[in-house]
Image (cartoon, rainbow, N blue to C red):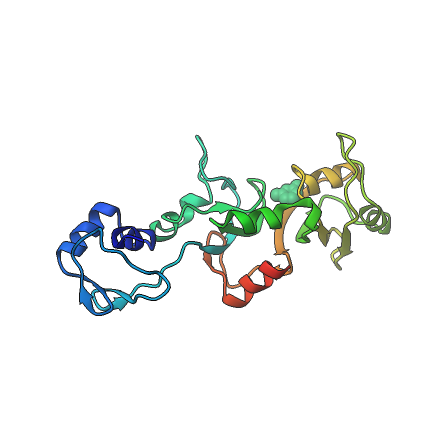
Length: 234
Ligand code: URA
């Protein structure tokens, strides 16, 4: 790979900016200063430094966000702020996209990556990847609701949901619901079919990976090696 591509791919500026860095003698490959943007770099073996700091090459990024309400789970939108708008330039540069959608008013765990293969795997209904939500509704939850969720619920368009799980919390109108698919407004529509209305929804887990409770709404961080390994092998 060309050195200018290597450096700009890792988020250190546009190809033009990288050219200036090279010209300024800021870049070394295996301790030798390189100035030509065409210089070849072996991403497996060569050690590249920028002002003495090693640059680790990477193609993919994996971010966990605590999505705030009012923001759209998309890469662009004509009217509203998107989850991508919340990212720093150093991450936007990798052109990540959200893995699945949370509604505009839904909060919580959202994975963002530019790894299409992993995203595809996590979103495939065949893989039955569990997604767990904290949910509050406008009525008390009942044992019948638990049974219905376990059995599968017929939505307004006739679709029968896959068996899920509902755990009622002490408050009575709050619980944790786990579903294996992600139809449009699925949880809200499930509760409508049960005669109630969702008043608050927050995703707390996906593919067994938990939302980091230290992340404030709108904050994000890169996945740890363990988390990445975990969702890769799920
Ligand atoms: N189900 C919904 O209704 N909304 C979401 O954002 C996610 C699941």
